[in-house]
Image (cartoon, rainbow, N blue to C red; front, side):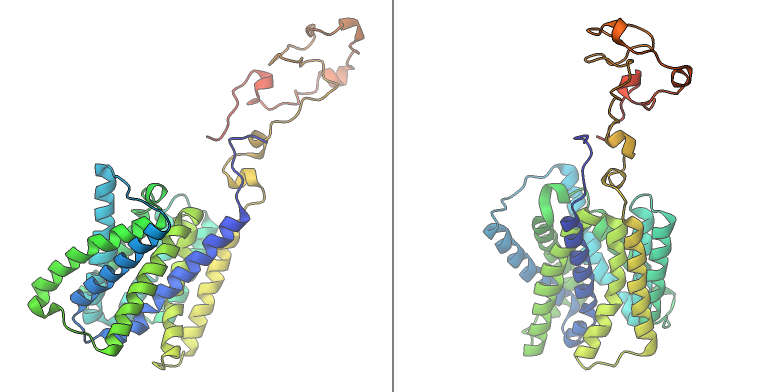
Length: 368
């Protein structure tokens, strides 16, 4: 087989699917847990959340033997933009959108993340776009359209933009940094940015000693929603690509429904359950659309280019060590008298090799 064509590893694909599903489900639990800390100063609480997450992530990196990586100026700017948009501005936008339009409006707009990533993450097939549309419909139904004013809608659109940046800005950084380091670096950069926002909004009241329930809520957000979910998402993203991974963002309202039921905050309604079923159906459609029948096709190369056809043993037109030999010419090292004559029908038959094959004098197109 052509060494330049990579064969997808089914175990890697399964791992990526599980990680993406787990990450987005955990992000969905944030809505239920946020009710526990709603009375705590928001910006100060988020700064504490990311500070604790950064400490845990750097400890994990040290245990795993992941040292510091020197970044170029471009990579540093990408990392800063990722932290600013995907963590800081995203939280501010969600907070402001919730104040104006309520959580239903924010959840509905964020439900379009799968469609946005499918459109921006490459060249999606019509089936992938259709699957993303089904996921968006299910997320919208499960969340509820709600009501809100124009500022609420605008802040929700800002949150949507930041959520897309959270994935797309990380893609060029992941090969060099990996999931643990990029999560640790972005969480660290978010702490001073949120602290400044807290000082501007709440002043010195941005921090206070949390109650026991608030401490548990902030700890859950930091360790589970930030540390674990960030790692799972950033580990799955390069395995699946943004289009496929983005489908699992539809599990955010599913996680919110499950958390609400578990914490006794409400029983799922029929629209909730129907919306969750639509989300699952859309994900299944999207995953079946990305499945490929052959490793060569999955790698983006035609099967004929992945494995050039072998030379027919009875053909006299190809000699050992010669890339091409015209029909009817002597083949080096072969007695012409021993070569059987071809019947007229066989001589009229087109060559057995494709035009791009080197045995016909063409250029071999291999996937780099």
